[in-house]
Length: 240
Image (cartoon, rainbow, N blue to C red; front, top):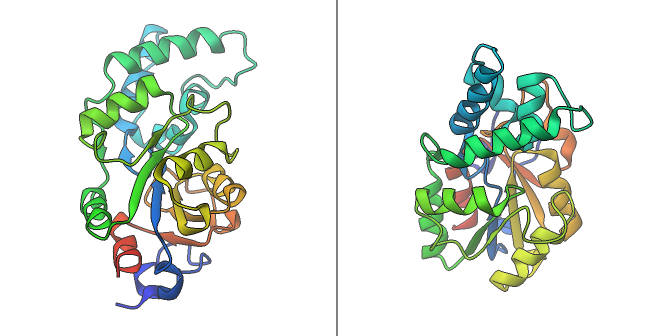
């Protein structure tokens, strides 16, 4: 199948990667929420528990899903219409965090094809890891529950370095941990800050179009190297 066919999707302005460029890939790093794992159901459940405490009805998953990649800020924006400057933000954020941590991985799953993709990377000696803005107290239990904590070459969390994405520090730290040069590394994510971080770190950014991208967002404006509409779309190009 041609590369153009593999990468066809609703956002057709994003260019497909060439086979030649993909052959130079020695490592693949993934964002967590909306790229590696579908964590939206548990995030939405925690939000709705907090809404219920405040006398509000539950929001459907479809309404919450596009905001998950923005963490507690995104959850409270869609759930309560507030931003971090609001007087009640900190208390609601802490309540959301506590509820989410209590039931961290009930319905969360790997995206379809991720496990096969990771197995193929391992078989071809291509290093891989996770770089997320999610704090370690959430990200590491999810990694354990979904069975990839011991397989990943690194798991860099939002509090691993002094900076979070779009700053390049987390990606550069991951590159150091796996021992692969940034220029030989792909970073796959579903948010503009993922691509910004990849660029800043000297990596090639890949848009995960299957992730938590709202219908009003056009990722072709992010300047990514290329885009995939399913995890396994990466396999034949990176692994040959």
